Image (tube, rainbow, N blue to C red):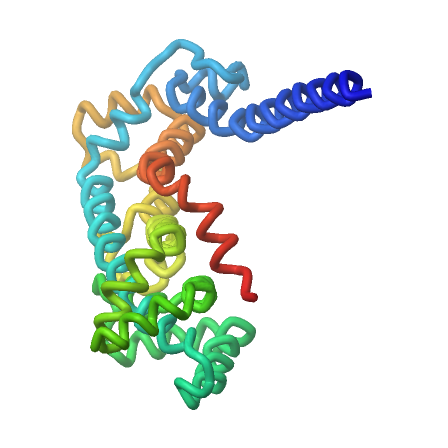
Length: 294
């Protein structure tokens, strides 16, 4: 009986691993297909000959994109946006989550503030009031228009405050006994033991800032101020021929809308693909610990 159970378990384990590997490859296939298109010639991509491997390998689409000063300017603006946005968002999230994680006896109006933030998840004023608010504060066409309006993500605050509430009360009590203030307790006790949740929230903030394109389209009057996602969303394959160089004209004859869009997708995804592996080990743990409240 024990041998039969062990054999059945091994068969199930092998089947489970094969099935999960198949699902992983299935999820990876679209990205591989887009990558293959980006390295293929215009004629091969247009004819639908590209599957999972480039046809007539070429890097003309990448050369066409990377030689444009608009792309480099948009890329640098997105890097600057992410640096400011993630820093401000994480700071505000921590400062909100800590007091909201306290009991009502320690923070009298905790429940009222918590429900006010939850209300913003369920309801919003709409696109026009949002735009008018940003315009009246004088942020239009500045980097702060991309950073300030979305600086506080209530979902991230809820994740972090639930993580804080799950920490042993003895940590805070021992800190207060030693004479520490709330500021010292937050920065020297809570944050060092909250790395999984902080890494998860940082990843959310990074991805949100990098991938956001609609706010750039709405809040930037000049295309020169578009972040990368907005620029890639609005780029035109056929520019004014009187303003392009001979090299660009040559590339225009060798690339197509499909190969260029594929190259844009790859370049736009590259920073996320680089950052994610370093934070992935914290991801599941941070989500589970921050979403469960005892």
